[in-house]
Image (cartoon, rainbow, N blue to C red; front, side):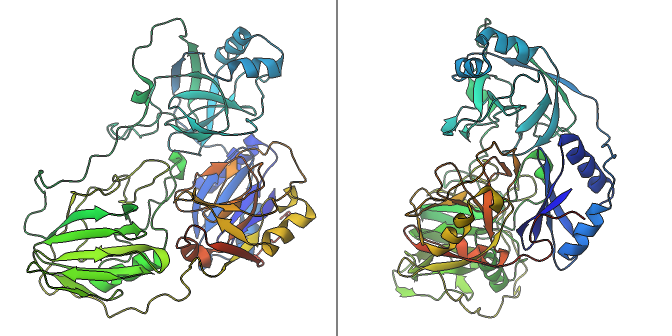
Length: 541
């Protein structure tokens, strides 16, 4: 058992093999440790997120180190057959790597049972262990930007099925029409078809006619938000009519925590302090949903009366009355709107994300307990569109609002370098001795390919690896700096995948994650290393 630093609130526990990993997971689930918030299992590791205020890192290491590796989790015995058309674009390549015919690959893949070891990467994505031991192939050297829903792939000793279209680096040998993830499944059924402990058997149906389009394997899109032609469910409360959204407008709250067992990450607001500030200003719970607005260009009209507040990025806000009178209004304090008022949020001068809260909150149905829109997993309400009507929950007349807030200091701009503290690890030793020094010495430019999943960075000199082996999939944390073969790091943000197969050289310190969520495209970023509490290097308890 080794303990590797991840961040100020997370560590990676590395074990000898998958059985030991699952045994420790079973122990920690059967007898939880107070202060542990989330556990993400993987092939040989557990990513353990914890509250430092509840338990210190060294005490957590001590208590985990005392656990037996003989525990087994009680699971319902289920057997699931998955029909597959073995016509994947990598089937011939896999056969060549193994030195056998494609038909023999199919025979071996369908000839044994698999067990769902753990879930991750994306909602409903199950890592299947077992099967023929000869089917052990590396990931693709260059991941594909899009793999179709239902694709059946191999990576290392694992098999898996992509629940929806997404990027990925697994070797694709076939495709299935069986949905892996479906939010319309009736409780107590879970959205994920495959659950840890399930037995899975693949069945070759290549010669049979295709019954349904592969798109049917994707969970149905969330119901659209009401439009001006649709009735609004909330009676007696105000409604916000969306006139323009700019680059992107999403509902975001504190996130959907505790869903890692189904491969669902927390998502949530990119700048949580600004989300909390906006909610305080209108008297809401601090983690209530706000509209997260990227890069301005947003406009709404108020139907009825409402109290709103805007926090986050620094930029102009204007209010136009129904009679045409127009004037600027401040951020970071409550704004009373009456019927017919139009509020416009302009392009930011610093930061990129604004948070608009409304007193009472939005009367929109949550998905898995949250209103956050996860853009990678496609869970939660859809992106807000022009013409949508956002119903507001009614509140008691005279409900309290908060005092004006102090605007945040040091919002990032393209005109000066943004400094982010980082915690080295957990896979710093997979890189050359010069790589960490280079990561912190040279500036990195934020590329236009950046989004809520992650910031793609470009540096003059790429980071070089010392270890070129295949890294078994392991949990990835919010703030992780994952380094693909290009040597150009990706900074994982709110909508990152739960697991990944490239080494993480460091993670942005938790207290700088809100700042990272406000960094604009073309800004230059520089990293400053700090020490993590507790084990700062691989160690044994």
